[in-house]
Length: 187
Image (tube, rainbow, N blue to C red; front, side, top):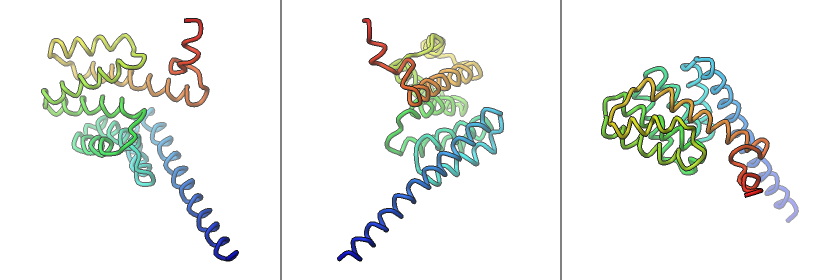
């Protein structure tokens, strides 16, 4: 009986260590990819995002792989990575990047009605948080049914990056605009 219990515990320990190891591989690859993308090294960044997605099938890695692909003008790959991200549960903080880049991809491919619908979904999603004032410029593009893809890309990159930085700040320090309890004090 003791031998079985020890074997069971050893198996559980190995399983837990395996999970921790795959997540650390995921995290390292994702971080490396983000660093490369910030430097404009999109091809290499995408390689790291794909490696991250291979170790842990999480939406964030696919969303960043789509972003890198879009930046390289590889719209077919970008669209596939967005579709992969959308299929996964728990999009969480990646939902903004997924929605924004889906709109950009569709619009750049010339699929205007689908792209405008996706852009409307992005603005609705983005407006739920603490949006930058430049969301109004995106809304005007939708209202006028006229999109300047270069300007839109710049606006969405700024909005998505700011959102992700604020979420990261909150996760690390429990401060910032998403620290709702402290934002409610004094109101």
